[in-house]
Amino acid sequence: MANLITELDGAKAYIGLLSPEEIKEANDLLEHLQKVIPIIEEELLNKYPNEKNKIYFAHEFGTELQKLVKENNVKGYQEKIFWEQIRKFASVSGVTPQDRKNRYVYGYYYKLSHYPLEDVKNINWSEWSQVFDTPFLVREDRFINWLVNKAKQQRIKRNEFRELMTGARIYLKDKDLAVFSDDQLKKRLDTVYKISLNRLRLYNNYFTKLNKEPTAARMEKPKKYRERYYKDSFNQLKLNRSVDIDKVCKSVFKKVYNI
Image 1: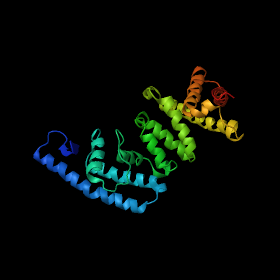
Image 2: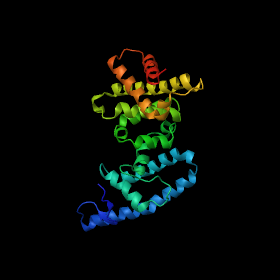
Image 3: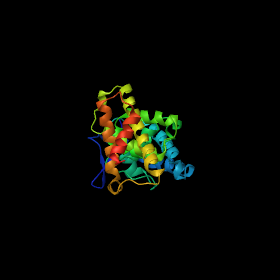
Image 4: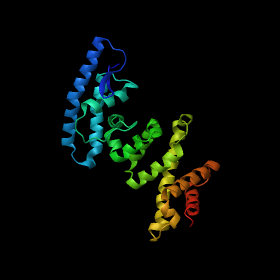
């Protein structure tokens, strides 16, 4: 495994008790990153200067990071430290989004690059960032696999993605996804997606198309009523899995929005 350097009280610190030879290896790796990361950043910023091409930037950067991880035998828990090392000591572009708490942007690039570009580019980078910023989603590779396959079929529009993320957070949070087989999880995620699309369609039919608005209470607290729609829909389907999803969504929507 790699010998890495982190930051401690504003100074460099070695990970673990290292021999003089291992300390030299850690310093050599840091010097290598300090040399190659700015080069990669500059080349890709010149290649993809437009923000709308950020998904291409992120995917290609992640592909380069894959090579560095493999070359330097970075494994397991070391990946987090590796991204920190790049951010703190090697990155100089100033344009990459800042890390925060458990947010490691270079790790996001790395994770995304494990999927073919053609399969991930139908979702914008800003939307991928939302997925990676949600710990219980990014820990479950099967959710990302499902999302990639869903986006293969057609581009997921921004408003559809926002609805999907709301539904996914409500449905999956605090659930032990390990109890679901791949097929069971896929069916549940397909249901979440359908419920999210139904909310958009129903809102359009009952309000936007008719040039109407929900009640004042619902306008003041849109998040509260959106979440109620999802929770009530999930509960109804849990009680009776054989019912028609569209009918459940319509019934719940009309009740939640007082139609």
